[in-house]
Image (cartoon, rainbow, N blue to C red; front, side, top):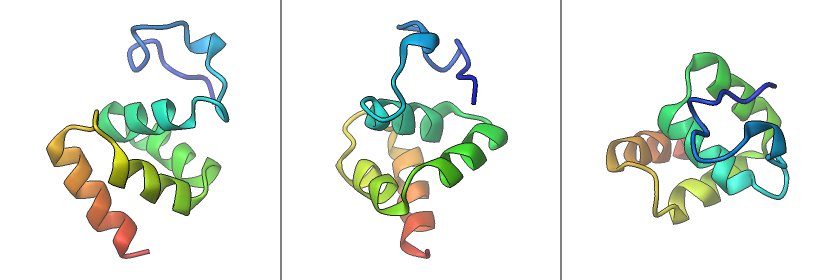
Length: 75
């Protein structure tokens, strides 16, 4: 998946390591990503990791955090 510059305006998306920077990627995509990016994220990362990031995130917007907590608790 090619990461959009609009999501990662503060860094070069080509230099992001999807494993090492998983929390960063997950937070940005869940907060600002489009449907295609969220679908990719959902298939790429383990649901336990997604749940952990959402639960512990201090950078997700409150509305996004609440939405993803609801979605992840139903799975």
